[in-house]
Image 1 (cartoon, rainbow, N blue to C red):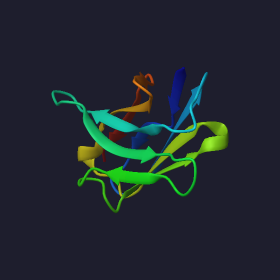
Image 2 (image 1 turned 45 degrees about the horizontal axis):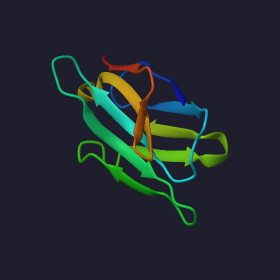
Image 3 (image 1 turned 120 degrees about the horizontal axis):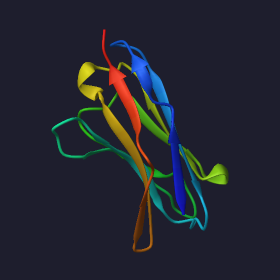
Length: 118
């Protein structure tokens, strides 16, 4: 399994970005995909997750710091998870890592830099 993240960049406060993470390889129907981030000098923190089931909508979860601003979504046909980030703040600056958890295994993408600065 490999994950390829994209979509990071430099934006001004209040602007938006959309991150994408495409998974390839043997992907199970039941899995959790999501995003962590790590800012310089800080521990990696969970940003958002999306848990897929055989039927119904995925269950999503967000860090308190991003609720109401970030939205996670997924396209199961493409094995891709997205993170729409609106109202970005300087404190959102970090390297964002996507991950996929299925069975007992967790896989990580390479990280994409998001910088919010005026």
